[in-house]
Length: 76
Image: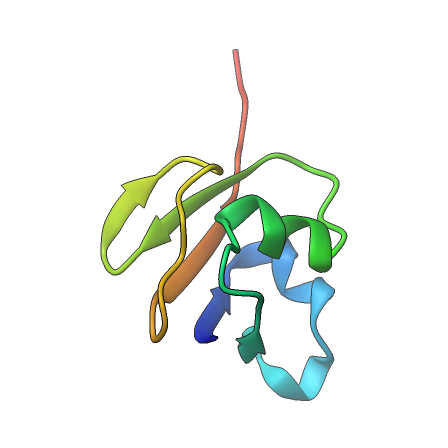
């Protein structure tokens, strides 16, 4: 299946610079948000939005989904 991905902030460094944080990924049919995070080797915490809805990392992806990943920011 194919999904569209947009990375925000420092996560954009996980794609080639010329991609400008956007890519189309081909994933297995049973892929989750965690599959994407692992494929891109994102080690820092990330929040995910799929089709304009916040989801957790176990969310099962579907053909044509639009995924946005943001770095989690902590503070105190």
